[in-house]
Amino acid sequence: MTHRHRLVGALLLLLSLAISPTSGRAAAPRWPAAATTGTAILASGDLSLAADAAPAAPAYGSYARFGLFDSQPQTTPATSRVQVQLRATVPAAAAVRLDVRIATGAKWSGWTLDVADGATVTFDRVGQQVQYRLTLLAQAAAPQVQSVTLTALPLRPEDSVRSMQDEPVAPTYHIRATRMGLVGDRTANGHIIQPNDWFVSLPSFRSLSSKGGSEYMARLSYKGKSIVVPVWEVGPWNIHDDYWNVNRERFADLPVGWPQDHAAYYDGYNGGWAEKGRVRFPTAADVGDGAWLALGIAMNDEQKAIDITFLWQGSDPGPNPTPQEPGAKPEPAPPPADTAGVTTVDELSAEFARSEAKWYEFSCGQGGHAFWTYTTTKAASATNNATWQANLPAGQYEVSVFVPLCRNGKADTTGSRYTINHADGSAEVKVNQAANVGKWVSLGTYRFDGSGSIALADLADDSMRSLWFDAARWTAR
Image 1: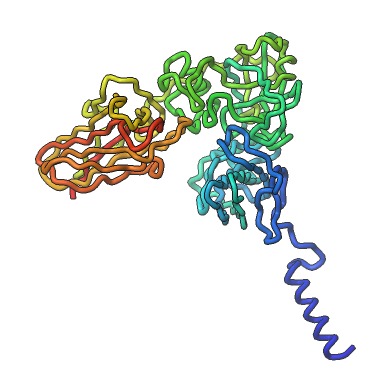
Image 2 (image 1 turned 90 degrees about the vertical axis):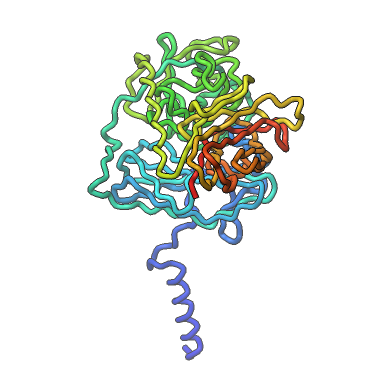
């Protein structure tokens, strides 16, 4: 062999070692998948939407293309905390949602939703497997994901968590349910609904199984008949109401086991509204047609009260378990005390006044509550207005309002008009609430001589958008 041939051979050997770090074993694939629908791996190696990706199910909103990617479970040392790294390119009118869960054996926790890059997810239990789920959505240009990394953090002495092996009996609640129908529609996990289908829809992405999967199963019982079905859809009235969880995603002021749509219908909660609109009839589960018939319910009898057991939350109690009563309504947390120089006025306090008009309420924002109404551009149609009043020592104060993050299924206003009444007159400040959800927004700094107020009305720069009324504060400067 010539010197040149030996050099080329050595270079090829070095290259092969760089590609496969472990001798005799191929490099691990960049995107190992347990389940995937509507996704593709680009020539760059990035994960993106397939060219033929289908439109998203209604639970995701209005997106022309949709894809789901469930990673292969990753085995780790015992942990209850997972650090997340996400690298992605997201164009306008597109979205990437990252969810994470943990398991011991075959039983998974619920998904922790919408995890941000750099976040550490803390679970209430110890597991030895972790997994992520990517949801890709686009109207036009598709998002591209370069990498997702999950790092299991070691258990700390102060960690107080339970093992998933120490499971209680799964809870059972008595709810109203409806027959699914909708043959040919697509569910949130990508399944196409078939005649006589066998699954259930529940109102939270936290318990959505993969396409064709059985990670989250529910026992349905009705008049002596009892069946077990997977959770393959999100709905009917809400998409953030895991009412079976003690630490539910939203509506924390409701008792566990009492669905938000039931509270809206029977108790007038949130003015009778759920996330998808005014509740015309209560239903906290949609049941596939085949499962509905298996329970002994006729196809033309489209609503019934049934018992439902959430099997991923514990051991199976067996057929026809006795439902438990919804838990006691938790006491709302008291608002945090103001620090020196800060005066906060909540919309439920005596210092907040609103007009006699039709108002909506929602369980969100500061103190878990906010009022809202619709905007209008016509002065003659403006009926809703409110004022926050504060008694202040004379001085300079920065005025701020809180814009709550609330999912009422409506678009938020981009042109609200706040009026600040101060010692030197008044000032109008426009706020794009849609761009500032979950934030305190400064309205400027002004001089006050003992009292002051902020006013907000439904007259805005747009119409039929949600206008939110939450807390306001004055900070001495």
